Image (cartoon, rainbow, N blue to C red; front, side, top):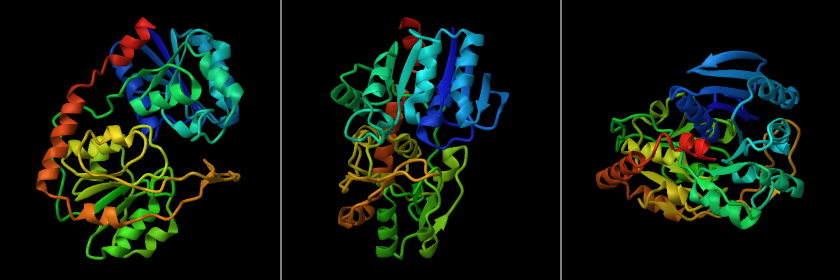
Length: 351
């Protein structure tokens, strides 16, 4: 089988869940003997990564490159993720390979329909409906697509966690870690907890949301760089903080932390309810309901972040113990053991 991934995102580096899962899914298919090609946004050129031939082009050139590579490769399936403002990649893929496009639902806000969308578009919804198949990476995404788009999809939880064993990396005396501390992800909760608990250490790991200057004003917040291996980021953490204020489609980092025995404090929104696997603590937040107009140079519209109640989060911080660490690890290990690394392959073959 010949599989082409066409995405309006870089192939590497990529610390976001969508970018990482797309890359690992494609590399898994390549390892299974399929011809795999990626067409992505980035510095123009061609290179090979883990058996995947990667073609890159700057944004304006990307749709044309998608059509050119599809014409040259004649793939059996073309995977297009939802992280595609304006749906320019999806439109190009459908034009070049009708009946062969599979739409991957990663980010609800990037869908062209529903109450969470950044870019509502009836014509965009019609484009999505033309895909041969739609894959949702969580039950929350499936339900959203069905309710607000009237479209059926297949739920496939990507196996992005690597092979066991998963060592216990927790440290009860370590910092509370938050990945991608920005407005979308609940930065005010991190800052508020740091102010309320000067006796605790916190670790901030900026990614696509940038580095907010407020982080440097808290003496008990250490800012560290992201790393290709999430275990290096999580190592030695007392807990992982995931106070997202927008609907997460799933929340891979929650499962990754729990695999390593690190308890998670997560917002009770979207797919985080699934990612927490029934383990405490899902905590209330006041979610984002309004966005300011998007400015030039900004990846997303700017969120209007509402005030937050820190009390449940402070109480949960005091509830972290060895028993919760063990419960987290057991639940995540069972979840990952039940995943089928060949599920996407089988789906594409049978489509």
